[in-house]
Length: 492
Image 1 (cartoon, rainbow, N blue to C red):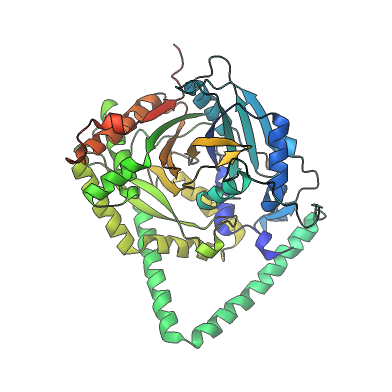
Image 2 (cartoon, rainbow, N blue to C red; image 1 turned 180 degrees about the horizontal axis):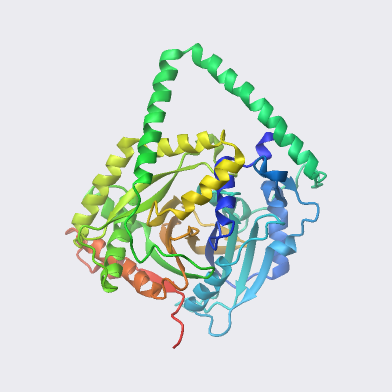
């Protein structure tokens, strides 16, 4: 089988973390569309028409016997699109809170390892928008072993169209015919053969190094130094907080929707980046949330794991994971929005200079050479450690509207999976001039997720007010509509 069909060490890590754990490693999104919902049959046809553009979506995992290699992707001879496209309906009145509750239940369910690792839910019954226009939702889940955030955006762009009246996608060169499913003995033989071939690639690399020793040595030293800094930062651990408790199998979900222009105005006025704005908003909101719970925040700095794409531009659209990480500090005790922004901006500048992302990529690359069983144990051990308090991921999405069967997508709210002992994840995506914050939480650890959603709204408003200048004399809430929803608290 082609070597590209074998999971990388990073891809396989997301599978290993799930073993014996309630942490389900799928990325997901909740998308809201305007218009009457299409029929199930129409939606099925639209997906079928475009499925050949993402052939991995017809493949499932095959494990190597005795754990002697990382799993491989193989064609699913029993692939059935109706298994992956589900049909749901909200009960009346179909509020956004009911939609958030449904999303939380769906995000809590693990994907079937015996099938291609994705599913899409068409959701009807959503209440009309404020102006009375009809709406419907689509909820999509894909395992992290298959796709990271950046390439996931590209897959969404492939499955949907960029114009309301897009012409039909051209048919594939030939009808899809699954390759014969390999036996366990064949999968094992291929894995052992790769073990034999890999040292030869290493020797070729050493030969190339010998022809350009100075430049190559400088590059290796730089990357190893960055890897050392990354490893040391991760091993120092993260502070103990109410967000870091053993998680269960159930989830809550909430979202906040804001104009991208608001974040750009803030970063232009205060001097920074949109990512600085996002991290500052999360810092301010979490500080308020923890203080309301009676948790002291003076001097408290949370450690957030911020995934960073290292995917080359020519590889954009390829599946699999090409991400590294940086450990970004979030100051909880700074309540002044401008001061908090300045602290976050300075810290992120220091992280970029330190080369942490390069170090993380180097460490991940080295893992490809580790024996599979050892790396699997290391992945599970790492997942049990409190190396970070939460994940905050900010993904740039398409800035032109996407359409499903002529219906425009008006909002998208992403989902980042929860790690063991990490009860909250925050994912942000920019799409068509909007910022969508998706908050995923353990159901029992954060019954007050709605309070955090309101804190995030307030932090956005306060940071925007703090950055206002005289050229904006009218009230900010009239310029920037911010909306939200969340899984409601259970009745007592």
